[in-house]
Structure formats: C-alpha cells, structure tokens
Image 1 (spheres, rainbow, N blue to C red):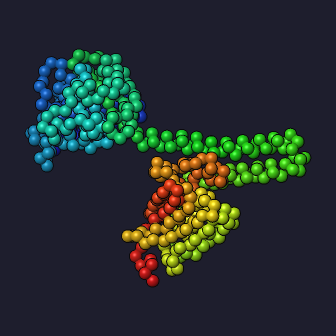
Image 2: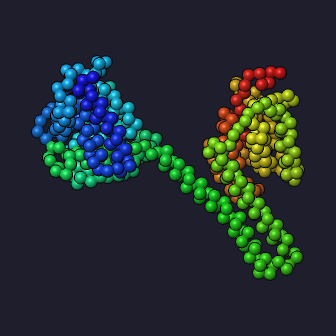
Length: 440
C-alpha cells in the first residue's frame, strides 16, 4: 500500500474519532487532531479538481497533511494506490461515504469543501460523480435552515463550538443533532479557517421521547380520575355519611369499583411493559381452537347476558392453531370482552376461523356502531380510544388492544381490524401456520 493510501486510510479512520469527540464532548485536542486530519484527507483526495492558490482553505490543509505524512513515512511507494490498484482518492471517498453520520466541511467563505453520501442524502444534494458535475458550492445553496447556517457561521467567524437540533426538509421528519467545531486553530490565519459539522440522526430517540411523554401523560390522566373519585367518597364518608345506611354502602361500592379500575390499569401497564421489553416468553404449541373459545365465552357469559349479547362460536371442530395457549386465550378474551362492551344490546359476538396462505386467522366480530375510518390506523395504540367517555364508563383501560397487537407480533403474526359504520367491527389475529397443522 502506498504512503498516500496509508495516509488516506489513517486520516479517514480518524474521522470516526472526530464524530465521537464532537458528540461526547471529549477533550479538545482529540477533536482538533481529528478535524484537521479529515479535512486534509478529504480535500486532498476528494476535491482535486479545485485550482490551487493563495487562500485556498482545502489546498493549504492538504499540503500540511501531505507534508506530515511524508515526514512520518519517507518517500514511500510510487503514486498509484494500494496493492489492489485502488486510487487513494477513491478509497477515501468510499470510506467517507460509508459513514452513517452526515459530514460537512466548509471554508471561511462558506464554500462546501467536503460532503459525504449521508449529508448529500440529508440535503438532497446532487452527487458530483453520478451527475458529472460538482455539487453545491456554497452552504446557502445546500440549505436555507438558519440553525445550520448560524452554527457554521459561529464556528468560522468566532471559533465557537456549536450544537443545534436540525429537522431536515424532505427527509420524512428526520431530526439531527448537529455538532460543529472550528478548523484552523486559534491563529485564525486568513485562507486557513473553516468548520466541520457532524449530523447525528436522532429521529428514533426523538420519537421514543415523544412516546414516553405521551405514555406518562396518559397514565397520569387515567389514574387521576379513579383516584379523585376514591378520595372524594372517602372524605364524604368521613364527614358523616358513614352513618347513613342509605348511602354508605353505595359509596363503598363506588370506591371499590374505582380501586379495581386502578388495579386493572396497573396490571395492564406492567403486562404491556413486559411484552414490549421482550421478557414475556411465548411458547407456541398446537392448540385446539374451539374448546379455547368456549372457555373464553364461559368467562364472559354473565357480562354478555347482562347486556343481552349472544356469543357464537363458529370455529369448526378439530381446528388447531400454533400458539401459546395462555397468551392466545388472553388475546381472545381482550377482543371478545371489547366486542361485548361495544355491541348493541341484543346484538351478537361471533368468533370465526379462516385458513389463509401460510397463516391462520381468528376473528372476533361484534354488532356495534363501528369505527370511523380515521380512527382505524391508531386503534391499536396505547390509551387510544374512539369514545373516551363511553370506554371509561364501561371499565376499559385503553391498553387491551395494544396488548393484543404485541402478543400477536410476539407469535410472529399480526393483529388487524376492519369496520363499517353502523355494521360493527371485526378484529383479526393472524398466526403463522406450520405445515400439517390441520391436515390430520
């Protein structure tokens, strides 16, 4: 491998150290060394088409990097790349483009010196090789985002390290943590100043944070309502209502009902958290479906009878599915319980089985009012309710469908819903089917 190639590989490798140093705020010397190295390597090997001259930021750093490499390794081999015949510039460009983080280097005139593949994708910039021409020459041509422009300006003009949160336009709402550091040292020699910026994709972290905040807000809200009712009736009893036979038992019944609601909510939260964390083990085996549905209906018989809802098991005899028996019963119980709650009085809840290509489908249909199309994409979200007041009045926690979805996925399957306003809804559990499952 030639000296130039060795230097290129070493300098590009240090780029990763620069990214880590920027993100973790490690000592400044590591950042300065890494930043100078990557600028020299990238400019020398990726922007050879630019004319040399006084005040050219990239060329000056490239000269310094080449001189340091020459002093460190002597004359080295003849130019021409490594033993595989790969030119050093092409090797450096490939390594830079393999980085997941976006890398952007500008000079003191805000001219773009280095732009790797991740940054080109982020800013929808043209690829010079693919298009046969250079990409954007000025930072203002690359982006109009004031946060990006101000961060690089502060680094170039005042020598400041800057951190900013950036949401790139046209990237599907992706959010980036931008860390910018000045190049050129404290001397700030004209023509040898610039800035390097690393864009870390934090979209997933931002979404997780929003989910966490929504979850805490929903939990607080769901617990506050029954807790407020319990405290209010306890205070009423303490104020003298405990000696009123016509009221004390009714108040105690309300307290007990709200305490049970809080208990159910906490149980569902713990259950869902365990499933999402992957600590719930699913042990699939051959399960006779019809007897399992009968057990579910037996547990819900009194509630269905109170609402005048008929329970129909349409699963044929002998049908077997591959699932964890306890978890499948839990999913069917959640779906059938919801179907009973939201069916019209005198309606019917039906459980059916359908064999699809490679999958078994178990569906639970109700005779309720149906779900509007705009609610269907979110119906399996935690705490999502179409009618919050009615759901709370019927005793729901808002987590049952989320548990069904996660348990179905834990089996390698999926949960789905279809609904027509005025005609009811059908929730379906899809389970992978092994060969010979229902052939006997």
